[in-house]
Image (cartoon, rainbow, N blue to C red; front, side, top):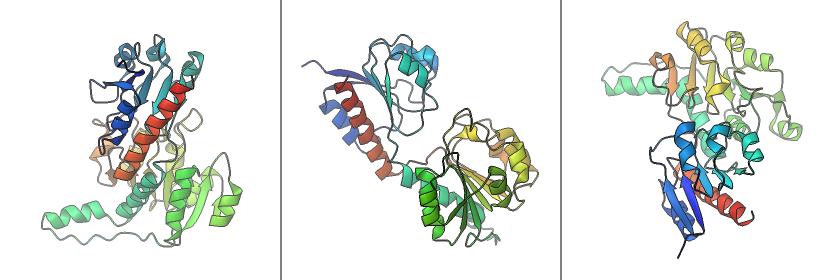
Length: 312
């Protein structure tokens, strides 16, 4: 029996925690072409793979106009995740390629990691762990989270989920967003304010906005130097939201207390000087990496793909 569709799976974590998404893909009549390099693909690596497939379960690959140009058969790019900053949406539209995402499924997982970084930074948990394991028994003096000020840049789904967690710590919550949800803010007792006010007032600043031309580098040298010396910056959204060179300088010079990063301008950030600092917690883009979120995201990506293929 000939397969209905030929599908390229570029995401490196698709169906890794549970075989069900891949099983559903094959049961839907799909022939699967797997990512040969087992990492996000660059334009020149992706382009030859797209010429003979109907759809893609996509990770963080470079879906540029150049990569898509010769993909005459391609109908759907189904993102295994939320962000589409690596997809040239105009090129996809011009070429008649539908781009779909799984926007709801990783909200709670990313919010959990975000607040985990808040607590780990404030209480110096990684340093205390290493000290105890090495037999030094260092007594690290952290800072309280209770009743402190949390500034959320981007009060969308994940930002709101972080705010809900912060309420359990009786935090005062500030928010900055170009689209303001006043009903939610009122019910959650969140104060909208200009970015400068948020940056200069908050004890913890957490980034949750999309990466686009307007938000790129939204936290640069100016904003970092407005922060309190005792404040922490957390980014579980996209690396391009922060000017990394400026962040390195303020961290190295002790102008802010620390940073928790799950995302970077270049991933993996193997040559980033940020990784040499003691006042940073660095995780490898694992915001959505819970068993529950990855399974739901995989199933959602497959369902989005098949539904859109069958209606085109």
